[in-house]
Amino acid sequence: MADWIDPQPVVVSDELRDAVGGLPLLAAALAQRGITTASTARAFLYPDYYTPSAATDFPDMDRAADRIWQALTTGERLAVWGDFDVDGQTSTALLVEALRKLSVAMEVQPSALPGYRVPMRKQGHGIFLPALDELLGQDITLLITCDTGVDAFAAIDRAKARGCDVIVTDHHELPSSLPPAFAVVNSKRMRPDHPLRELPGVGVAYKLVECLFEQAGRGDELGATLDLVALGIVADRATQVADVRYLLQRGLEALRSTSRVGLRALMDQAELRPDGLTEGHIGYQLGPRLNALGRLGDANRGVELLLTQDVSEARILAAEMDGLNYQRRLITNQVLQAALTQIERASSLLDYQALVVAGQNWHPGVLGLVAGHLVGRFDRPVVVLSMSDDGLVRGSARSVPGCDIHAALKPTSHLLIRFGGHPGAAGLSLDLSNLEAFRKAFSRSVAGEWDRAAASLDLQIDAYVSLDQLSLELVGQLDRL
Image 1 (cartoon, rainbow, N blue to C red):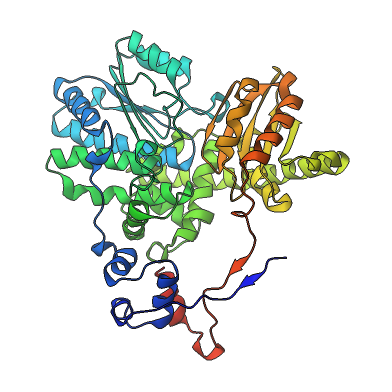
Image 2 (image 1 turned 135 degrees about the horizontal axis):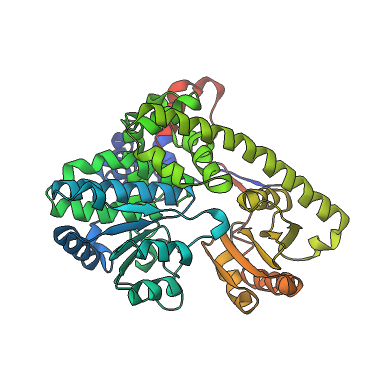
């Protein structure tokens, strides 16, 4: 059972209290988190007071932008390669929309406007080689990835051999060496304390577009893309600090007044009022509907929804997503119950530091969701795998506070075909013959990686509030945090 930790006394200056409108509870909550000056409080609460970082802080950003401008001015054929989750869909839509605007301004023929490709989940994250060959057969000379690509060595080599440059925009953990791309724009290349370090894929794509639009004298058009940024940031559970928080604040404003007919149709389907949208509505209503396409269907349809200007098409796509989301809930529950039954019958699975379960042909689109449920139930890192008829095992991992799941997978790489992801979530594949060896090796690795003190269930209390202080006004004040 969690212990309650009483509020720690803090000194709240008059300056800080004045900066937050004279609200003592708000000022104390900020001070407890180290935000003690008026300037830092204003920057945290109000995006108008925050100074975002320059796009050119990214390594390779200038190089990437210059190559794109070269391609646009000389009439080269471009394509964008995305990913099938919400971060990947929004990144793809953002880049494609921006590149098409710039192409139209340069009077590029409609047939040569930048296209895009999002892989199916069965093809896996990353650049699927047969689909890449198809793109290269269309005379593509510049491929821009988003939310993927930092470990796509074979695909980038293939593209280069066919005369196609690759610009990688990504945010996933870096491999031991960077791929041989023309440019690699990745937030994980920033120093650990840089304000751009925690940007997800859509945030990195946005900064590239920011660089291009500012060079084109179209910086005033950036605001129209922030609705996509908000969706991707929340759906990818990006850490809300510095530029990430700033972009989400701006993005929520844009989302509440979005002119995208696809998003309007999706909100109608979810029975949401646009002007009242919060990050919670993204996380529990809009995000799952978009994600359902990547889990059970074709995520290219999600990009179509975000880009379409046809109201009828938007309504059809939104209804399709709603139906898939309903199916996704049913399938998730089925796989979860199968996993729980397996654990009940083989209780020794719980003797390991990490829980690894596997089932025959479990639907790959829900494995991460099931892993998340099991983490909450058994309070340890979880890997959920699907065994396919071809002898391969593929799945998703989810972690707990204090355990970097990506780092824990590295010592087991000799048993894996492929793995990648973040500290909190990862994907992996391996041969069925290595499953038991992986379970043991991964458990040992987790034991060494897991900082249990950081995973404490203790509950830090911010303040005790009397009943007569509770009001909707107080809720509004706290929402500003």
